[in-house]
Length: 332
Image (cartoon, rainbow, N blue to C red; front, side):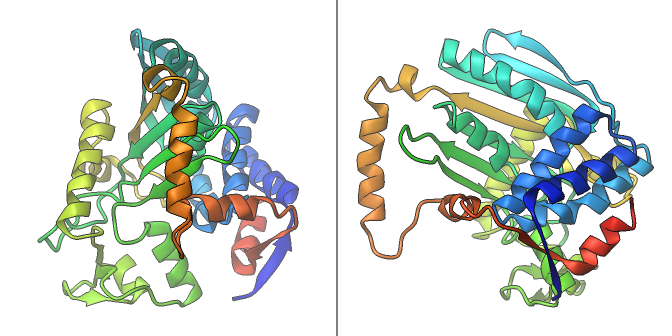
């Protein structure tokens, strides 16, 4: 794979310019370009510039409103709904998170439901933002069916990711962000693009057979849930939280509605924040740090999110797939 070095500010400028050309106003372009840049910064390449052609496709087809103006509505004292105005999810998150943080600090627990957005990014952006304000963050979202429930060979669930972040007063947060499938779809697509195999059993081919070929999984095949029925049950929970509770589309409904332009389908997101200080008391950080000390004392362990935070320390250029970069440059 040929790569081209690109500094983070250039990655941002490139993403912002392309998004602006195809219909994003300055605020919308800024939100999405920042999300893309942070993904590249932290090594989450499947959610960085790799997503730009899909973002553009959904702007060109008019599926996504590039000038969206999300609005917050308080459903209860500590439950907020963001009407996303059919824009990209990072825009609605940018509008909703400050209100969620304020609410959670007042009431100990806050819920943010996001409707009518198009989600194409990782979830750690929002949960980590909460943890940086000394709040616990939990987020999940559904997607079009690409994952077969345990025992099935046809898809019903999306990759249905879930992210959790725990704050640490004197260190970076502990954050995980994972698909409930064996691999995130974007990672499978990157492996297919770059000609890499994936672990055997990541998914099924079109004949319903387990395979290590990402092309066979992406083209007519299906992903499997991690841990068989365990991951399948968590994926079901996410469908109910991010669609049933939010009041937006289940994965199968998103597939029926989507125009298949290659961009993100419409759907919702469920975010919960918790104040450990109000719930557990002022000693919450010292207490949890004792647990982290025990965990990291075991040989071979590392805290979730640690690799991303280590990548973040590098202020040098990132290696971008040259073919992808050529594709994006042709969009300008």
